[in-house]
Length: 377
Ligand code: AMP
Image 1 (cartoon, rainbow, N blue to C red):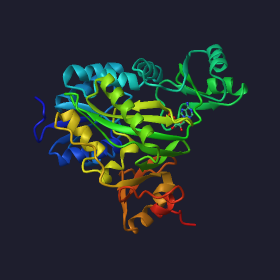
Image 2 (image 1 turned 180 degrees about the horizontal axis):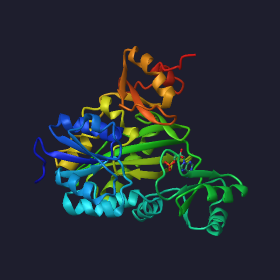
Image 3 (image 1 turned 30 degrees about the vertical axis):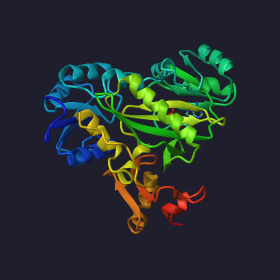
Image 4 (image 1 turned 120 degrees about the horizontal axis):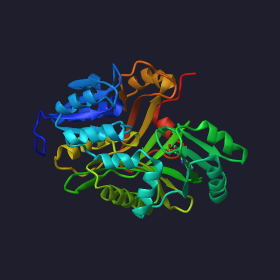
């Protein structure tokens, strides 16, 4: 198969969650079929896809069968083993390349890569033992944030260290080892940029957005971020620099902190569609999911322009699901459900977006009101 992929080609997506679901829907609109590789029997992505292979991500027989059935392979789930990635890469084009996933899977590799590319992060040190943790905490000071280097997401696998007594507790609690200690960033806000990059090096980046978390999980994204133009531009240029340095083919999200002096520090990168880019489904002619599919299929990348400002709110766990009737009854709220049956606490069940004319995002206290999402008493 040559690129650009012709209509009816099959895109293999590793991972069966909501990111795969929304990618498969975007792929279908471009005339492609999606084949999902997932461990889950009834996954959000497989519900809207052409085919599914249900298997462990490490099983060579399943990986072979999956690769044989598709024309290009991409991801919504990053934690595939290096051996699994190498096997897939030997059989079909993998976009982004396994080396890019390798960097994003490991916080030490990620921060080393970023710093070598001239991109600022919080100060950090690798931590392989309790003695190293004491030494690192002495150098970086407290508070600081101890994290697993691998398999962390939504605040899982991290602890904030506030006093000396926290060190041994956090060391014992966090797994898998080794760990990384990061200086605490007293951030003014958290922002992110999603960028697509084609095999020819062309790039399209969405506007810099502002992210608010609740219990370590993304709660609300405001597009665009309400920050100084220079700071938003710094985030754009950092994101372009990272995408180019990675030689990315596909989509990349860069999560950043704005420190109190207005300096932009990268927290982490994800070479895939990102929760903070969901607003693009409704506020942009071509969403992050469409740009992802276009980039990996070798199609032209349209500019990542937005026609509206937007607020996106995640619907998390049973509380999120409880808002569903009110959302459906409220004109102007744009609902998205992910097809998950079990509303466990902390699980992302869907999201809702509201659009505003450009320049008319609500003020500081108007965001929840704009969503009309006061929980029922
Ligand atoms: P992460 O898993 O690295 O994305 O971290 C989850 C959240 O924890 C971030 O979105 C921040 O709100 C917070 N956080 C992570 N690292 C730091 C840090 N070095 N300083 C302050 N807050 C942090």
